[in-house]
Length: 451
Image (cartoon, rainbow, N blue to C red; front, side, top):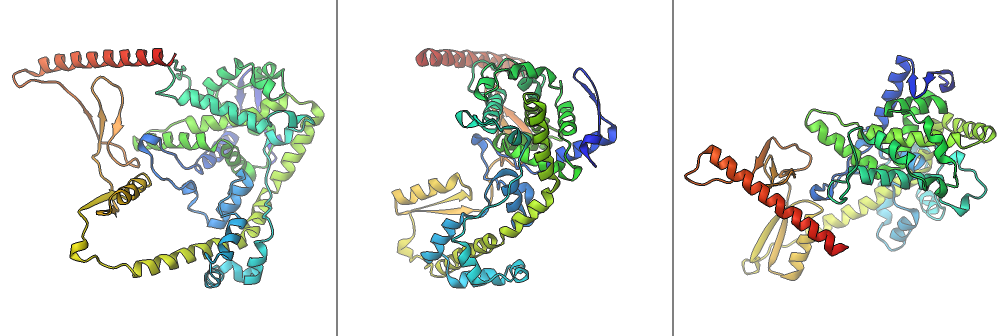
């Protein structure tokens, strides 16, 4: 259905789309958000596959989507593969294995010579533009930040301020949510328009809808893309701020562990969508019609573009499989040659670590410092199903793997052998206040020392 035919009533900042149309937009937004993998904070970091939410798709299809929608490479660059081939890291037997075990190569009649020749041809994949890209056609654009760069910068600064909890002394008002905070911030930002070559940008901000939901419906109605392309377009929009989108996905994950929902990822999507229509207001009618024509034409054929990219990546998938086969072969040979230490060569210290990216550097360092130390990896987690709050603070520190939610909260309490519960509570309160005072003085001294 042509999105331009789906009109809404508009009065001030109130939008009234039909219920069915609104539901379809919401479904497309949710589908786009589900494609974003969560990213954990540093103090409880977990190595998460960035394509985790796409594991239901074949690898080459994911690679095509990431390239076309986000200009992100999944397979190794061809110059890297060429080097691995010429240095013997990938052997002819590995390439033969890859060709034999890739069903698509048989259908495409792909040969070993075809694969080798492809290494000398740079990979050029099609890309689908966003509204901000087709609108940014100013002849003087080389003298400033591109609109995509400027918008990414502005949205990132907004998110950094909104989600900060421990660094800034002045904290923002978060009561109305991320979208409302961004909307208010943008109306007071007098520099972003100059960075983008749009000194009158501030005059166009009054059109912004009051809520994130209204913004989503408003934008999708304005740009008029075919419904079959909605979810893909929205996913491409999120990929322009993939880092913050991943953080919002983490907040959603944490909320889900408690049986709740989190609105931040949807609100971030609304922010990025709204930026496109703000820029529409800054262009004249001729430029707007030209931008719409370019955008709608390319996204009408989005499915064909994705299929084309998928076909172009066939060779790269074969080389990826060959690269993995070569590594597996060498690893198997190495493991087969491992000798059991004699009794007099037993280590003095043997330490077991969780198999984790944070543990690996520590393990290597220990073994390099002292040869009598041996470390081993253990496929499991250490911890308790609790959340710990130190005395006098509001910090909640989970003591278990990040994929799980604590089932108990543990706090500190001051007590004496002869005191009852009431006296213990008073002692705890006094100790808590004393610690808060000490932490406050430390924070003030830190500000003075940094001044």
